[in-house]
Image (cartoon, rainbow, N blue to C red; front, side, top):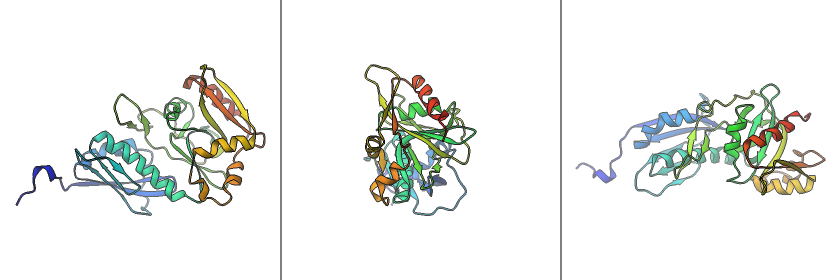
Length: 269
């Protein structure tokens, strides 16, 4: 007996493999979601890899009129926009969970000097304009990530050039490849140069407010993932901050932010 139309789902499937920080994850887009595979591959153009997956795949389904959900192993959504945004979140989560206890992982955008690999990390909460800043700054410096910047114990920065999540008038953020935006490709070897915290200035000024090391670490800590899983977490985070402290970048637009990032790029590492 044929299946009812409401439960019908094509049997086709598409798969590809992405690198998410130190995790290699297979994406399996099943049924209707397979029709979105080319869009997903294009969005994730800089994270595609031929490496062997090292954990469970992310199963992706597009089933209209179902509530949207995501985890590090599945995406189940009712619209194309939801599928692609929740896929981005799931891929990031897979990499973050894999790095727990080993990496300092900041909710941040990152850009790198195309010649030296010196990386400036701009941490901050959601809604602070990290993706918008990454688009603007990434046309001058190498695009590292617009969401998660991970730092190893020896202060190497792991690139995570995921699609940029941009608000373009729809409920779900559009996932746009850094290649489509013309963002600079960073060097393979990246080293931490500076961490700064993004802050909207109430009067629209562009300023640098330097905080003492202990106060700066306390303000950065809420913008991390799995910090408590690290051995001596506060010590580990403090080791990434200069002895004289760290900067809070108050800004109104990405144009003003560029001059502040330039200052941080010029400071000897």
